Length: 147
Ligand SMILES: [Zn+2]
Image (cartoon, rainbow, N blue to C red; front, side, top):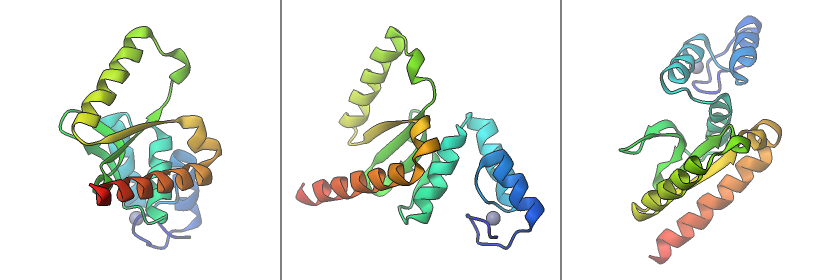
């Protein structure tokens, strides 16, 4: 068993502790660091799981990336892709709906592509979610080359 962040060997107790609390295999130091990020940013657990799955897939993701105005759950900076985990999309209000659209407009203007991923997709279909994001990344890369 190894830490998904630093490849350090971890024992059974640490493995269980990190899996139970974060759902990702991490060493003591990285479990502590990630918990601090969650505490500071109210980061959803699914963002942590998606971050490490994308890291494993070689996508070079960044966790809680500050885009100048707000913190993005997971970002792929080289293609300017921002990924936010949607936790309560069922209870969207009309104010939230128009705020979301305005945010989307601003990020497009700044050259960013922002996608929202329902937390359930990460929870139940992590492989498919990663594959789809990799597809979006290669699509964005192709577009950047054209421009
Ligand atoms: Zn580690």
